[in-house]
Image (cartoon, rainbow, N blue to C red; front, side):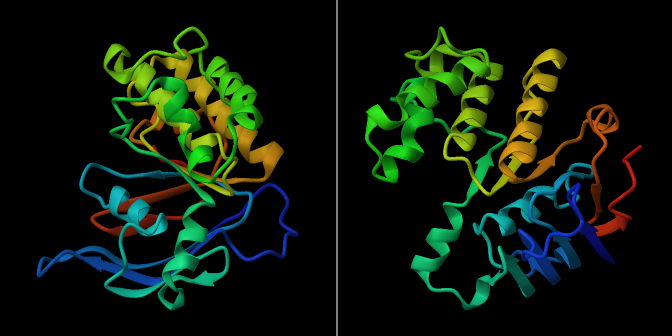
Length: 241
């Protein structure tokens, strides 16, 4: 099954942010977790990934952010064939991808501010150059008064918002979010979705949001990629229901 997810302007000629060509994934000697996936996520697209638990969503995301290699088939990021790239080239690609993990992955010894700033520090940027951006982003997600709070003092929803801010702070070309609204109330969920939409529309970043929340999907007019037992089962332009 072939699915193409385009952004609002169809005349872009850039290579897709993500392209899967007959990709399959198997862990050890088990059955395929993903089978024969062929689809594209074009540059500047906004799309949802959905499916029941065990359908293969997290495995698909891990292939996109290069935590896994496919058992067969080819994965392309920003027009580059991943299997042909050297380690330094893979590192450069990873820096173009922002990831919101379902389990947050915050560093417990760092404050909210320090966790969000960490990707910029790793890139060698100096704090005076990014302080305002980090503070503005934490204010936007409603944590302006918790800049110096450690993760253990934050609620699950607050930790999720720190993780989202961290993924966005370097203005990635592709944002992947794994159940980003699972630990926040409906109002904050909509606020976070508006942030993703702004990243998509203003900066042209591609956004792929994995979620079980069909209500959330129904409220946003975006293509849907649906997995069932490791297979694409519905046209990407249909909504989950």
